[in-house]
Image (tube, rainbow, N blue to C red; front, side, top):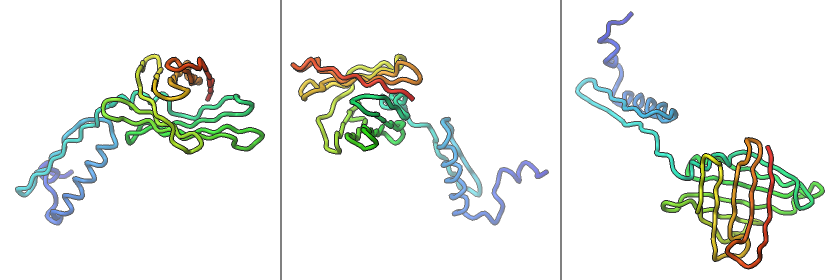
Length: 188
């Protein structure tokens, strides 16, 4: 067993760049955990430290319950949607409707923070449509409502995880004149 002083100082062959590489490796390792800690190294008159606090959770992070692959029968075919986790500051989804084994409709969606609110940008058929803003959110109920009263149908889109294996997406028009409602019941 090495004496305690041998563990607290690097060996004479460990040069300054190697200490920096070691510290960088320790920082990277610590960032992959969700704890908050400070690493400090002092030797030969040099001192290195780094605060490794986990990033603050955002409103977007609270929509992590959307993540996964969801599917259901609708519009005469099979609708399949994939939602990513909010890692990296965005939730990205893609969906498609399969009719007789062929894609008849597809859409991309991006959820991201814009200032203090979450913006939902749909791209039906790959083309940008008017976006919506998160107006109501209940993380415990796993429910989020996005609205834009100034756009065509839908002026409101509600995502609700009604069970661990069921996601309901409701497109509605409470701000418009159509009174139209479409409900997507999707399952894992």
